[in-house]
Length: 116
Length: 114
Image (cartoon, rainbow over all chains, first blue to last red; front, side, top):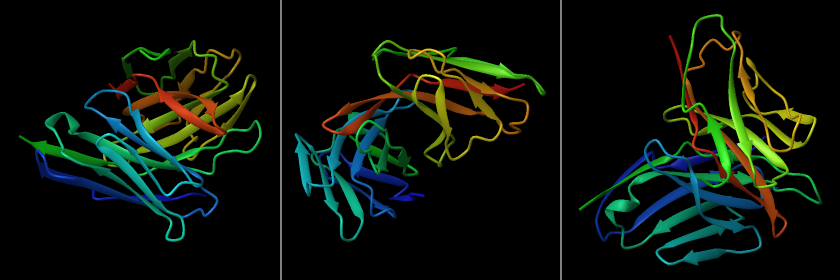
């Protein structure tokens, strides 16, 4: 089955700096890569996702890049703010064809702390 | 709350007891999922269901059971066979968007052993 490795496990940055979180996956059939943000005691919330037919996607201060050849994808947060502090999870899915649903396999999570 | 309701928020289990966690969604999503979250281990899939009256085991199904009698509901039972049930349990549901399913999560149930 799919295996997703996420690094680093903790990341501490100063406000205004950039933060980068990296994930690798094992299943070359994976074609959907979402990123979730989870604040303490709250539910994970989807912040951005990328499909295998795209190499990069950006949404304001957040961007995700995908290298299918190397089987890794990364989350980039620019101009970090204290409210970006949370646990971030990457995930990978082989998606699904037709009407079936795929399974998401999650990375172990990265605790991001943004210091004012 | 995104249309996915989990209850209770906190649950305590006595040794040898089965407990059931509720998950209800009013989003008309076909697929529903149960995850277990332990510190430092991310989210691990317990069971998932793509359609009513059908479900599949995930990566850590031992000691758990589910049912899917209605589209809106996907309860999880933590049985006495699950020897280490203390964790945060998250329910999710998904809908196809552009050929890919996007999962949305409930607020979670925190289960502890007395």
